[in-house]
Length: 318
Image (cartoon, rainbow, N blue to C red):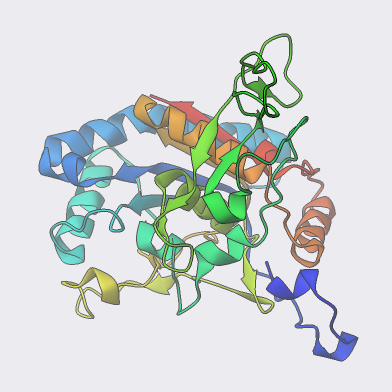
């Protein structure tokens, strides 16, 4: 996702978009927040036990689609170190690896949620924000500032009253209305960040949207991928979250971190967050220089990728 895509540059100045290795499927085994870790090893083991049958089903579905070719599948896990930092990478990763192994699962990659905000010195979240194309609501009267100013994104027309002229009878209240609603509206209004626009505190749904784009291999800065997985060295900064790479590779023989499609097995409490994620991603304009080659590579493998990013994402809510 290059910020150069929306401005004029000479052809020789346009950065070359570098491709990234892609699996057929990226399976997310869960998210870890402070309260989950504080609940102890039994909570982690229960998470992986619940996820295990869904992992098998997702792998089988991928294999069925590919036919005789073996699927390239990688697993990942996201740790919240953005809103709260707890324990240390050394302890948390050791507990995660042990809990997954007890359930017969392997974690290939672990990512920090802070890495969805800033990674490799790049403001990744702002890159994605610059590619938001908010839906223009019908009958917009300008009473609310645009997303770039307000930090709020919706999937339709918000409720309210149109401003009345002096001495005029106030217009009646209008309910919110979802764009392209089927029979009835399911309207959502999402806070993407709060605080000053130049120092935003990103919301969980927005960071989760960045996370999905990372897993789908659709983020670039000046043509280069951001947050490439790094081998995990427990001796290097293992007690400091800020020194841990955005994505660490735990399994040296793992398939690529990024993939054509993603599958996330999550606790049911994440359902509202993922509704917001899908709404955000439906209004992100991925650069053609990034999206096009991914579709072409998929086609060369006999895979037809949906044009819409959200249609490449699947879930199981436990």
